[in-house]
Amino acid sequence: MEILNGVFSVGAVDWDLKTFHGYSTPYGTTYNSYLITGEKNILIDTVKEYCADEFFGKISRVFPVDRIDYVICNHAEKDHSGLVNHILTKSNAVLICSPKCRDNLQKHFHTDYPKVITVENGQHLQIGNHTFRFFHMPMVHWPESMATYLVEKKILFPNDAFGQHFADSKLFVDQVGIEIILREAQKYYANIVNPYGNSVQKVLTALKDLPVEIIAPSHGMIWRRKQDIERIIEKYSTWAANKPGEGIVIVYETMWGSTKKMAERCFVEAVEKNYSVKMFNLEVRDISDVVAEIPDTKTLLFGSSILHGQILPRMAGLLTYLTGLRFNNRKAWTFGSYGWAKQSFEKFETSVKNAGFDLPQPGYYVQFVPDENTLAGLAKTFSEKILV
Image 1 (tube, rainbow, N blue to C red):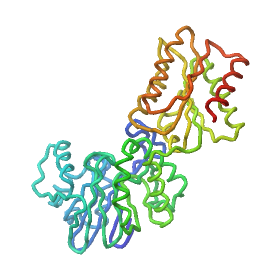
Image 2: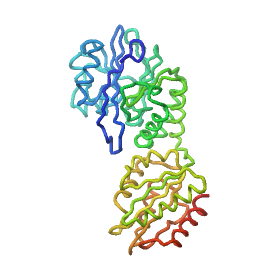
Image 3: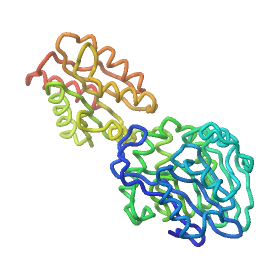
Image 4: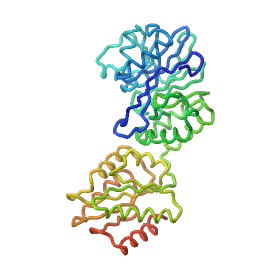
């Protein structure tokens, strides 16, 4: 499908994908690839190998694959580079990538690339009647990640930046709806890009003076309306700075319902004080959905029962996951129910601190089943010590 005169979307739609790197993708995803036609024909990124039929079919509707002259690889991860070698073999095209990307491709596919142009940060390259400019984006989100800018068309191809895991027959954000795409972009950022906020800020600074009229990421919908582009860039700036929101997240895992009762009492207390609150039971909710809320959150409550002297497994998994995502500037509080190993909550609190959260107040823990007086005490402590 043509997204602009001479620029075609030839990627693949993965309707069946339900998890990606361990987080839930209920809407599936796309692996976007772009074909630019002219005096020389240039392909930007490819797709996963199992999407080969759809990918080559879309290219062939524009022209035969062997007419591709250059392949730009912005990122060596296989959801974008999976068919690079196939294209190079079928077309005898020249590979264009960063030096680190070339090294990573060699280690992924154990192939030498004799026809390769390695481009440096900020470099311009004239290819036929098109001018490209390349921006290295180290750790957004791999060391060799790169963005490509098509000067004449004012299109930015930023690979994984500004993307979303969202499958649709349509191509553009405004065709689907800005709010759901922003929501999925936030989930994508929080679960994949958040550890690299400093790098994102540097990239945003480097790109801020570019006249961008289209942002064409490698996952999800394409940004083309001026107001939508401004909004996603503003969001990225906020997320990259790790600025907390105003909301509260309550996440818990329970054995016999006692910790659930405590979570529900905290929820009611916060709602009565007009806070925006989201609550997650890890038995039925994915940890990536919890993470997706954190950019809008200033306080997180973690609740768990104790089993074999440890917090429950899903809660432990969430905290391990959060440790790698490096959220900060947010406070937390812990609560839970135990039978005879209250000291195990010390490790719980340590894990929350290690995940980057401030604990201004010791947790609130109940032996076996909380009664009304205990729940009232929980609500009072929460209200007076945490909701301030």
